[in-house]
Length: 112
Image (cartoon, rainbow, N blue to C red; front, side):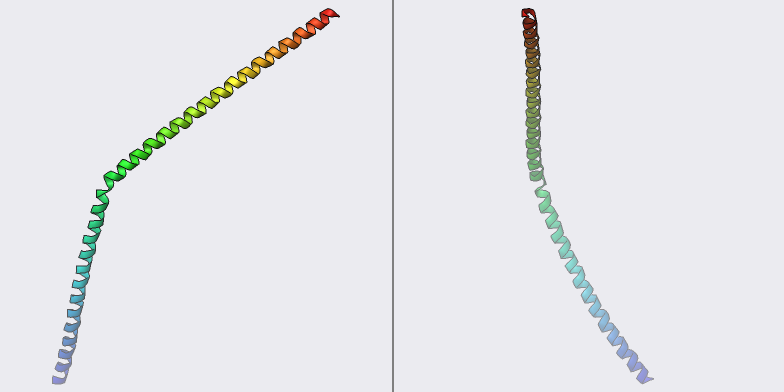
């Protein structure tokens, strides 16, 4: 039995050594996770510091975009008005030409 007791004690010694190694490794993992967590918290804190600056630039560019859209709409409306005026002028010229043609025909018919 002493041989079996030595085996068990040898087994138990190896098991205890492995358990100790695992415990040390788990502590290292825990320490590294804590360090990673602190680093991530630092990154998030830095990101939050720039949030107000980001909002400011966002408002600036949104304002510029609104101004540009208003200018484009105003230009499109001006072009539409100009096209409508040109169409009215063309219609007026066409009516004037038709009236002149009718008067010319009436005058030439009267001369005959």
